[in-house]
Length: 267
Image (spheres, rainbow, N blue to C red):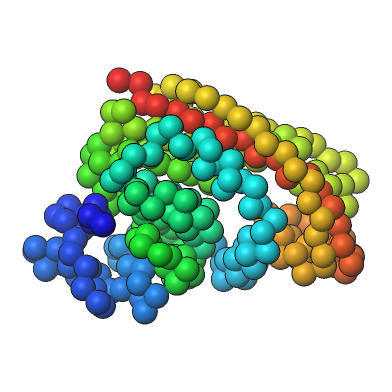
C-alpha cells in the first residue's frame, strides 16, 4: 500500500516506522500501539467526541444495527473504485464503516481520520491494511488532487478542503440522516417531534451525481438502546428524568433512514 499522508508541518511525505511517522525534515509524530498516528499539531482543536460517546458508538455499531448501510455503500461505490484507488473516510470515528468497506474493496487503499485520538485507536485496532490517523477536518494532510473517493458519514462538511484534496474525476460520498431517522426514539423522548432536515449543506462547488434513500426498522434491546442514546445529541438535550425513563425500557424499535448523495467537483 502506498502512503499518501503528508507531514502537517511542512507538507513533505511521511514514512512510517514501528513507533512513529517521520518526514524528510525530521518532523516526527507518535504512533499508538494500535497503529494509528496523531497528526494534530499542538495548539489545534483536539476535542472530538467524549470517551463515553466513542465507546457507546463502538458498542452499538458492533452489534450490527447499521450493517445494511455499508452494504448499500458497497453497491454505490462499485462503479467508481478501481485497483489502487485512494479512498479517504473523513471523520471516520471508530472506523466501523471504513473497515467494512476496506474488506469489500481490497484492491483500494483506505485511510480514515477523526479528531478523536481515542476513536482512531479503536479503528486501527480492527484494521486490516487501512491507515488511521487523528487530524482536523479543516486541514487534512493530503496533497491537492490526491484522493479518488472521499466518504463522509454523519458529520458536518468542509467543502473547500474536500474540494482541494479530491482528484478532478474523484467523487465525494456524503451520508446523512433521512427525515424519519430514529423517529421511534424521538417519540419516546419528546411529546412533540419533528422530522430531520434533509439539507446536506454542500455548496455549489460540487455537483450532485446521484442520491439514494434507504430505510429499515430495527429492534433494540436495552443495552443497544442505551448505547444509541449515549452516542446521539439526545443524551444531552433530553431532560434527565425522561432520559432515565427511556433508558430503563427493556426494548424499543425505530426506523433508521439514511440518504447517500454522491457528488463530483465542478471544474
